Image (cartoon, rainbow, N blue to C red; front, top):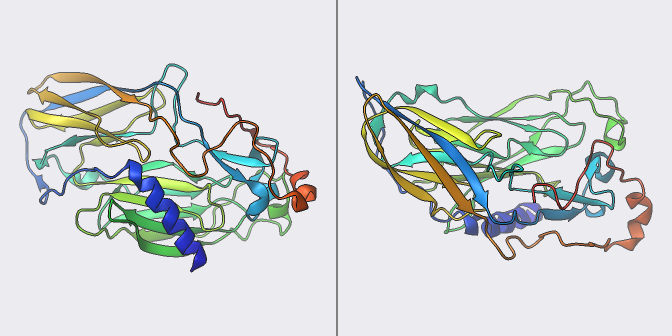
Length: 316
């Protein structure tokens, strides 16, 4: 219960940046459309990329295995902002607001979220209410799923389940910083059942607090997740005037632009999101972080980033 309560507090703090989400809409109507338009564009982050979160690996399980990705000083970093060298804002959701009918929603595919290298990947997803989400453990380390829905009213637990480890792993794999193979554990499938009006789904690991995954709940099929170039495309849109919006769990939901879709014509738009400033999270990483728990210096000396050495400057 303490772990759940702790994680609930973390979710409640994080959701402060995602309070205003898509308003409740009535049931989406699937219709046949003779002439449609399309929308494409890019998303960029303006300003300085925020500092990542920082987690002292000596305070959580599997510090050696999970420390394969770390800064070399015993800290694991989580950077929620995936930004390219030219400011391209990747892995953000772009969607239309105010569209209540259009193409079939049958194109929806349940997202597969993997626990891999002590990360939940992808970090940003889109889910559909009353449909499935798939989660699988690809690590030799123990993970679990603590899934919540959240809003300005606070979080509510959706499900809390262990993630099975593959039986193919040798018993010593979880203790080794040199073991980099991944085997798929038993797949866990759960149905997302949101409270009416709530649009944010989040998932964390109860053992490793730096493992997060977030999702926006979609009411219709007119959404896309920006690619590595910050690009997106929406197709088969009924002609009309809509708001195109951007969603990311640590950015306020006031980024929008009005666009008009015309029959048989492509429309393009460039969206800019201003980077939030100030302290975004309680565990925001700082320069020259120190190791607080000196009694575990022997463990810290074993934490070697054999897979990826993280830096505060990545993405900044």
